[in-house]
Amino acid sequence: MRTDDLINLIAQDTRPPVEVSKALLLALVMGAATSCVLFFAVLGFRPDVADAIETGRFAFKFLVTLSLFSIASSLLSAMVRPGQGATARRWLLLLVPILLLGAVIVELIVTPSGLWGVRLIGSNAVHCLIVIPLLSFFPGVFLFRAMRNGAPDNPGQAGAIAALASAGIAATLYASNCPDDSPLFVAIWYSAATLAVVAIGYFAGLRFLRW
Amino acid sequence: MKNLAREEEWASWMRSAMAGDSKAYHKLLNAITPYIRVMARKRCEQFGAPASEAEDVVQEVLLAIHLKRGTWDIARPLGPWISAIVRNKLIDSLRRRGRNINVPLEDVIASLESDERVSVSDRIDIERILGRLKDPQRTIVRSISIEGVSVRQTAEQLKMTEVAVRVSLHRALKALAAFYSERANENG
Image (tube, rainbow over all chains, first blue to last red):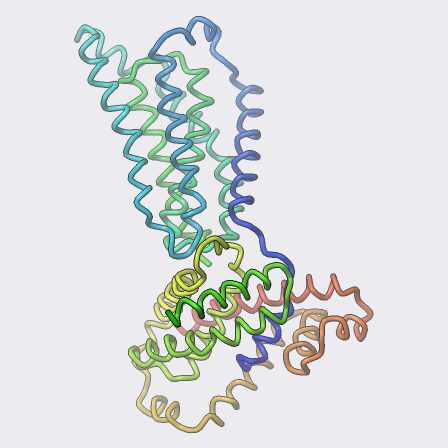
């Protein structure tokens, strides 16, 4: 095909393009809504949620998960815009492990060392490792569908960031069900679940977000 | 300074294009193609690929610019966005063709010959490309690109609505983009 012919052809396709930012926002809303429905249908809040809200440890879990969610989400649109991918804002993500590390240190100081093991292992680590990835699934699928309209410079990285945002949604929901509030538990098990989701997101990105 | 003015013009054409102005879009595509071609040829030369392949890369880049124009932030300059698309597509497409880098000397000599040779292979290409498309799309592509008929006239000829023709055209362009990357894979 002659390039001039192709240009004629392309110039006639004047239907407005999908706006990636809008598509991503919609995907976040849809994904979060789907996970919420799933969460409240199957798990729901923990029985003592009214008391728990007043404790610092319980509140801290949401500080961590919501920071993860908001920082990762704010990076999404740059990830799928050519020439914007690797911005310095990525480093904001480090805030989440720093928060966790700080809380772990405080916890180690205020808790007798005899309790460290109990707090770390908690009561339901396996539950955490299963529920967070499962609740990440729908936001992840919606986000990937929206990102397919984009053109990521680095598809693996874009997939990983989408996975982080999804895990942020999942972990926020799960935190309101999970009976373990110690930062020791959160730092180990929430992180392990999130990293598993991120690894899947990275490889899924390489596979599905190429353009 | 001159480049800034040019870029401002490109950006304004792109904004009009995204609002549905086909003429502005045509101007933009015509204006940027020579620049894309220079980059593509330079890279192909570097990898010892023939010039006809560079033209394939140019077309692949144009399709990518078209299909991904929703990722351009209209508040930002257009130039860096185009460069990023070109760079990504060039790397991608040369990497996929990469295993074929040892192009025989005859091919390189052939590529230095007249444009005639290029246009012959072009003709084979379009038959192959059209052969891959299903029917309303095939007729629409042939009519608009080769015969230069407008969308409205094409719609009248095919007894379709203009909207249906545009939908079909959009699908055809997506199929073309897929066809290019597939073919690059075959070569690689």
